Image (cartoon, rainbow over all chains, first blue to last red; front, side, top):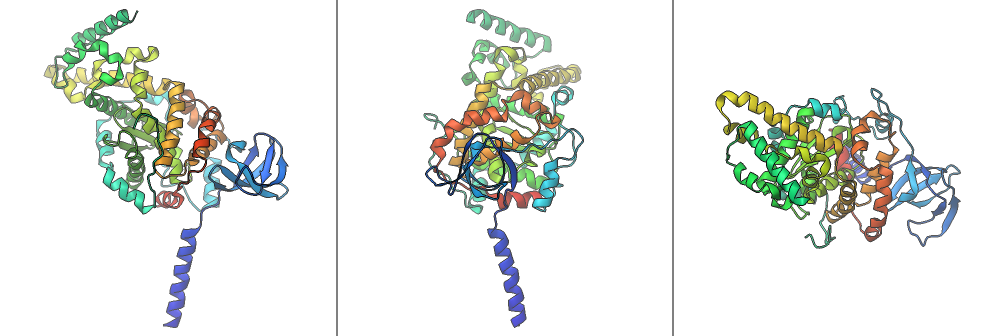
Length: 170
Length: 288
């Protein structure tokens, strides 16, 4: 019985731990202009070091408009998100995206659910298209409504607030 | 000059009517033609006509590439989209959201509440807030009637015909039985031509910047982390612009760098807004 309780506790603990973890971003990037690395995600925070334009950094996390980064010299701090540019991921037609491989390594997530290997979508595809009313009917079968959407929002603790989207329009 | 344009449009509409053998249908095409001049003002297009226009454009988009077969993913995207839409000024519209099965990175909107995102674009995201950011941008296009504005613009004026606002059934109901096949082809040719114009020429650049500006606020209003909008654009910016999957989006949108520059001035007001990324729910749906 005691063993069962211990096993159960371990399982429960691992679920709780997993649920509480946010997946780190860990993304390579460059600084877009000379700026300061600061101790906290605030303009008033103390400086850690000066960063030069095009300097390489690794993004570890984000808090509002700030990224937490590590420099190549292992200095850690915060930088405004608009002061960085993510490193490029070259991908040509027919190639498996670097990001997809990267995702499966870092998160254990494979993209099989979302990709069925269908081609692109360009002007030629639009030219050749024939209207597909049956697809529109299928689309309608997936619809949600305000009530369902409200329940869905609550499930993730999403709450609407009083931000005005467009002055004079609401 | 304006009068000449109005006269020309009326003539075009009347000619189109004659050549297709259309009579006054259950959507009152006759009334439409009488109001031909007013077509230039989007506010004079009824809700029914707007929705039909959107449905027709959606039929062409989905004719080019089908919906993704993952029903759960489509329903999830509908819930995210509907939650955003229910916080917008057009909450009562009959909104439809769909995932298009394509490796391309793009999203589309059509009048009347039709929104599409490609599975290729979802593949490049990490959280529900990033997905919501794209849907919010597209929702603003619908709310602000940007497509109706585009179809009235100089470049797309040739696509503006009454056919856009008629369902294939309404179109066929007003033709002789023997002509049905021919008329279906005429209908599909016209709506495909308009969809091709709309989605390959794109919307006005300022309308794209507006969709970003108000989209980020709709995201924040709905309780999502507004800065996911920025991350999204930064992810797009990091993909090689020569990547063929980006071709159509790059042709029809300002570059992500231009959009980031433009959006920066609107971020100050949102600096202290807290919101959620709902990253875990997104990862869970995608890994199922």
